Length: 372
Image 1 (cartoon, rainbow, N blue to C red):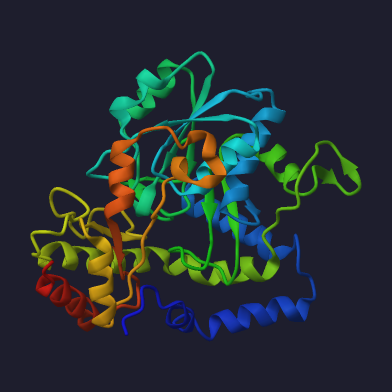
Image 2: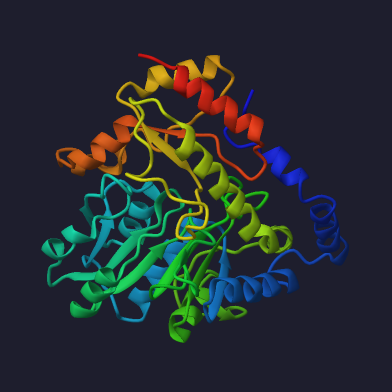
């Protein structure tokens, strides 16, 4: 069986360093807000290219805390609007609605699956305060046009960088440092994954960083003194120590994913399969870290069943778009045809830094032999 993502094998590839890091924390006997977190925050901020990194409990909390901090700073208030792609994972929406802000959903570009920037301006209103871009599947969603629109309308740019750790725009700028603030996820299946939940906020804004750090710690920057009605959202010492082991290899692991993606793009020849882009993205293209390799097929359930029979595990990211979820039943009447087409046809193929050439060859051969 070719697993969709062999987390056990990935973890083993970092041994014995992970075990040593965990033992270091256990031997020290300090499990929250200690040296490992401080060092990871410094190292990740340096890697991303941001002035500040605040470790938090998960990627959803990272986005929640950014918006909550902007509200505490008086930049936003309840009822203000945040533009967000309609086809994102539901966490992007939850972060907005949890703060009693209003998501304004915009269709994606069918070729990149990222926010269609050409549709942005028609959705901007006097209540719009920010654009939340989602670097979906690991592909950076960024352009000069996006920056110009944000500047023209005085909007914040908030990055949902949960799936794109390490992606770059140009030679110097990494996702997570492009906008005003970014939320990151270290869920175990991510390109930079912990051994449990974890997340972070990065920003160059000193005031925002100060408020996010306080909000994540019960609204407190001094013990038993609470400036805000905060949360308990902290990245623990063991997760920070594990992430410190994994971070130095992130670029190499991302390159392995690029090489795997290039193999898929060059060798999948089934005419009924829609590949991730109109033209192949070569291995040196650093604006994509291939967190997921997503194809489209009109009968994706049958394709998935076939691949399972061939010993190839696949997943669907995601079968139901946010506006069709029961939790957001007030949106169920909305019509986003591009988003709905994507969610009805996508299938994610195995891709990871521990897949070998034989694994990739087997996936390609099975797909090329598949016929409806």
